[in-house]
Image (tube, rainbow, N blue to C red; front, side, top):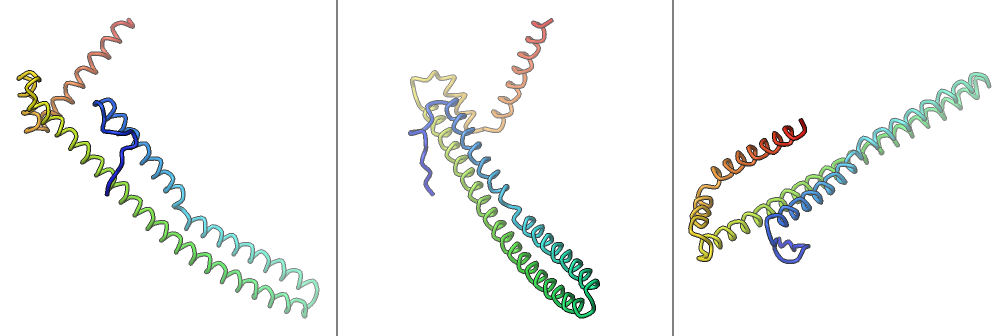
Length: 188
């Protein structure tokens, strides 16, 4: 699958790359939120079927009470009409329930496909980002204009990425704590 970059060529720097990543995450989040909003078709259809059954039951009760006042003959006809309505409502309820089940399965299938698509796109985006970072690391490592200590550090970072990430995260945490403490001291 080929993905085109909506911003033209590759990222010009780490800040632009971060903005592109955040933009892509935002789009994927919006897509998932829209799909989740459409997912409860089955629940709505069941509620509608229950409402139809309730209305049919209420109509049956009304028909029966009116028939009792009008006489035995009218009562028989009303009971028959009530049973007919109840049968029709039950059939309609079953039909609605079957449709709701099918719609629920369809929605679930679409959600699964969308989830796989999101997962695939995220994987491709992650691989592309990893490839860009690797290419940038190789470029810095082999470019003789870059000072030797920087090339050595890049080579080490590319061979051992986990420790570099851990050290980087620890450094960021220390730097963040220092900034917070400094702001607290200024406000006193």
